Image (cartoon, rainbow, N blue to C red; front, top):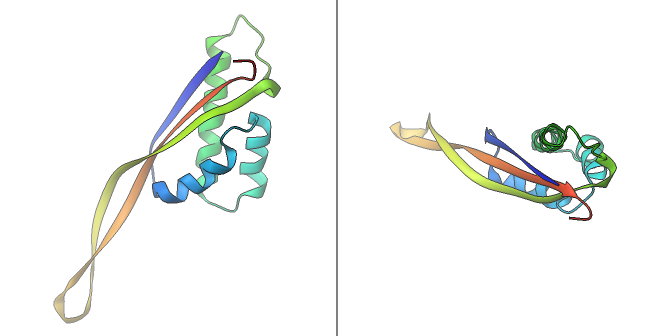
Amino acid sequence: MEAKALAKYIRSSAQKCRLVADEVRGKKVGDALNLLRYSMQKKVSLDVEKVIRSAVANLEEMNSDVNVDVENLVVRTIQIDEGPTLKRFRPRAQGRAGRINKRMCHIKVTVSSEEA
């Protein structure tokens, strides 16, 4: 059994999000959620947690006739892709303008049972 979830246009850079994703890749879902909720001091960890919970809910919805045991689920893959960049400008000295890039990312998560 396997399920996927996708969150697009998360307002964090892909580089910052990958730091969080590397910590939970390959872990059991319960351990990953506890790590994200209580141990990680990053803002994007709440977004990653939300996507993992969504993938678990998708798995339960797809297999509603079978009892899904959340304890046996593993975060198989977690992929962070770059999204679009908002370009903003700030005034600088002597009439110049400095560009500010507000980056976004997309998060893809796959959870599956341990025996898969």
